[in-house]
Image (cartoon, rainbow, N blue to C red; front, side, top):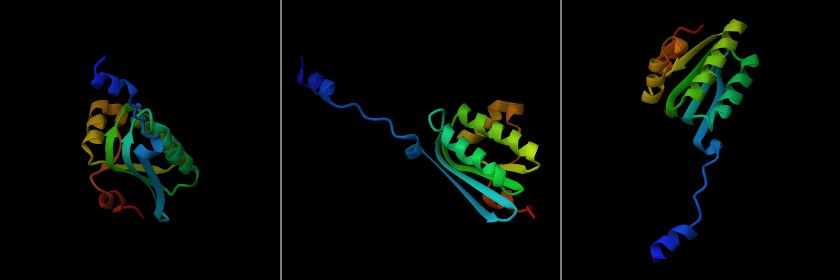
Length: 134
């Protein structure tokens, strides 16, 4: 066995980063009319529960307009889209309004490919998302 191969076999495998290290979700209420859910990092099947728990968990006490800022998302998979569809359904049943701030190419691309299933109200930036909220 060569020295290089023996070193590779003996080297410890790198550990997969914990979901919390790959995705950050923060919830704030910049006004009485808006609940802001800011998302940064990778949204995939490994991290989607963080988004789901934060977003869906906040809905019972959310303001009339929920803005989900996805502009800092670096990867957006189908699992993230499922969370948004679930949130949209719950928001619609509660009489609230939901908007997405996109701008990240990975988010825009998935929404485009998903077509009617991902027919969300989107805005290009946070200022535009809260501009006409009373």
